[in-house]
Image 1 (tube, rainbow, N blue to C red):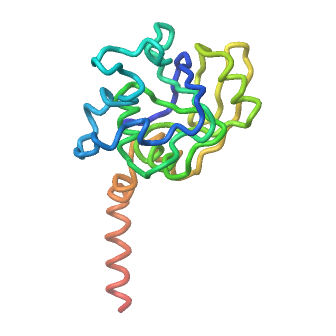
Image 2 (cartoon, rainbow, N blue to C red):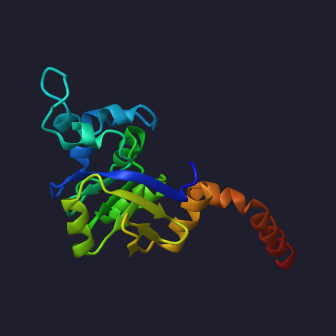
Length: 194
């Protein structure tokens, strides 16, 4: 996992509410444990037409959404099943952050564990971003602030452990491995005390 300290991008917007993990990546693509390559399946049934061509009505296929790394999504994003493939697919597609007024807890946890910044906003901030696609934002993970083009700032909170892992580019296992020396010392102390 790469460290996530700052993200600077225009926003792409999906105004639909209740976008579940099956819509993010359909169940038929969950046969792999590989994280790479899943981006081509992100929003598969929404993004492509029956003939395999791009669906021109899908918001992320619009020219103005190309290259955007920040997704502003409608309320209750990532609901449904707990598939970890959903954040993998979004990351591989190029999305580095999801902003929303309500993000499903399991999806949010999976996202943060895998390096996808999932930020919950208040309703007014969320409505403004939904109404202004293509807004240039800078997200500072260390300071937990989103900088707007007019100099305004939106503050957000991350759970401290998730923030630590994002800033240091480690997942839960990587964090434990970093503590190997301290764990060994503790075990040795316990053996001596026994």
